[in-house]
Image (cartoon, rainbow, N blue to C red):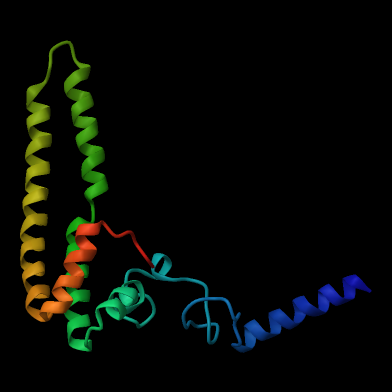
Length: 161
């Protein structure tokens, strides 16, 4: 009897999923119906048709931003994220360059200088992107919102999405 009940529940769940009912605790719209597993980690920064509103929604609600301000902040976050892409690979490459400079019979200063040059070039790109995007966000926000964002940045907020 218990096996029949478990089988009936599984069959109901399968039919509901196939017909587009989805699961009530899944996140976001998707091809399987109203809901779907996922989120920004699986579908990219933007999520399914939400722009950056998904991962930044808590910030927009806290700062009480307008749609135009949200667009500027989302574009700035995307630009900074695009600039930071590959940072981990550069760090791995620098670590291997440091190891290569130490590994030989004599210290290889050229390998270390090459690693520093790559790191400085990456940092210059990040600096320019951050300078430009921070100026755009500053221009888009009013004084209360700028103070709120500054407080969040200075407090070292953690990801809340």
